[in-house]
Image (tube, rainbow, N blue to C red; front, side, top):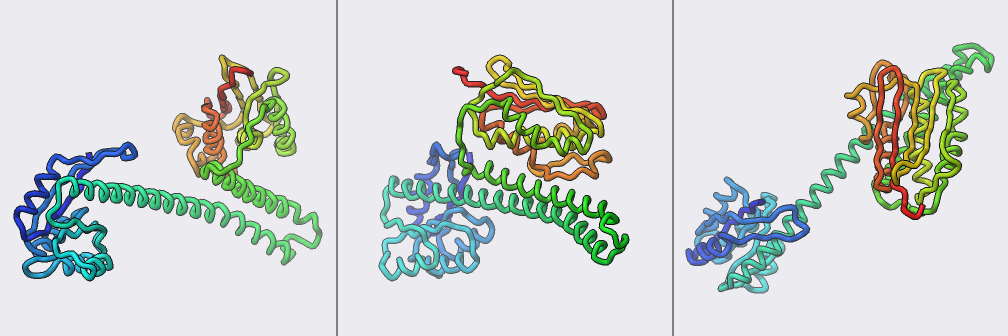
Length: 376
């Protein structure tokens, strides 16, 4: 239960006590709210007393009479506006006029309740205001979350791109100044390192684009029957040059065809990320074994490598955005820290799961399990 604070500023004791009585056991609850709201009512007989309470304990809602002894309600309203207090103000007055309405609205009043008011009129107004407060809080939460994600996004992007750009710039200056000699072959290592850096930046950008599509929910999905064996073989063919460079053998095991209703691009992203990690974190001369099989109404994809493996603590960090395992063995391995989080999100599109088993210095096995439709 959440509680909203209501301050009633009115010189009539009957009005103040009436508001307290009407709202004492009143609750506002809607299906879209996470919790119901009740109300704590404070009372002030004058504008000066109201301001004193506001300064000590800012209310969420102010029920404000305009005709007050001492300073008037519109002056209290102007004071609140100048202080920029986040208070929703409702004028309760029998002296409402067009001039007052214009003045009060320009100074921030959101509603009017005429005197005398019925309990239902007061409750109805408070219900509407409570909805506004709830939606405002939800909007602010979304803004704060979006701001945090954007900051994290830009921080990672600037960090991940700055290092390779600086390295490439340094390599180009070396070549321009002929620091290693006058022959092209003198710079083969420099050029190869530059190409590796460019490849890393391209991977980061593509991963960010994939993540943006997944998170936005705007990616166009085209669900069709897909042969996962053929799709995996295509992914293996595409990554084979990288595997050959590292002398890593890739083997695919499975029946002739395993059909799943899925989006071709999503399956490609899942397979490419699993294979890329299996090679990237493998040992020179290692192996990658891929098994695709039907298991109790599910399709299971197992990708096993003979690589550096992970500890239990490191395993617990996987599948989150921008997370990379950092240790002595991985310090020279580039990556965006997005691949596995994207795989997990895409696997969730099919109500599937992804898990991992791993032993340090022996290797890892990633297991993706996807429900298979009954007709298949």
